[in-house]
Amino acid sequence: MTRIRLEESIDWPAIYAIYDAAFAQTAEADLVRNMDRDGDLILSLVAYDGKPAGHIAYSHLALHETPSVKACVLAPLAVSPSFQHQGVGTALVRESLQRLTDDGFDLVVVLGEPSYYGRFGFDPKLAQNLKTPYDGPYLQALALSDDGRRAHGPVAYARAFAELT
Ligand SMILES: CC(C)(COP(=O)(O)OP(=O)(O)OC[C@H]1O[C@@H](n2cnc3c(N)ncnc32)[C@H](O)[C@@H]1OP(=O)(O)O)[C@@H](O)C(=O)NCCC(=O)NCCS
Image (cartoon, rainbow, N blue to C red):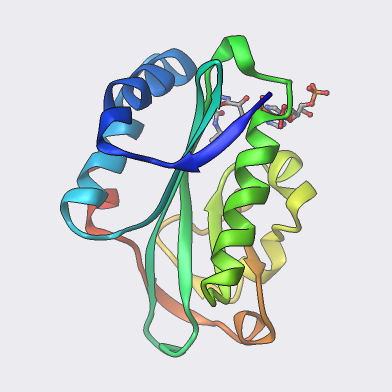
């Protein structure tokens, strides 16, 4: 059975192993570590199924024209290949969105496959109101409150995104 909990420092080797296995690189794990270094990480969850199976992270997103809207970025997300297609990714996304809603977040932005994120309500049309470095068909947004739907204009991602190679 999959168990999801907040990341702890003891999880770092497992997190690197998950991204290495899922993406054949560790740039995504470095992104999480750098967001943590900068104090920009707002949620980091690990899924366990006997052993570490998946990870998801969220970081701060600044909205210049609607600063009262509490927004964040979903990135990265990965499930180890031996655990994929068993609902681990879905469980990580659903649990994290519930926690963010409980914490008063209004908006989540993600860059990814609309066919995957659409099932959680992420919508490319809502993201078109924003001006980001990642504008295009893969940028999607999910409003967690009515305030989230009025977000618009330029945004600033966490600094660690600019260091991604
Ligand atoms: C994408 C990922 C996080 C999904 O996690 P998961 O635990 O396998 O997902 P779930 O079991 O909850 O859902 C599986 C469904 O998601 C869909 N799906 C999986 N990967 C997908 C992808 N890359 N694009 C679109 N849909 C995808 C499929 O419809 C799949 O259904 P199926 O099992 O009937 O084929 C995982 O496959 C992964 O880590 N992949 C490699 C890294 C990656 O692409 N991360 C996404 C960053 S945007």
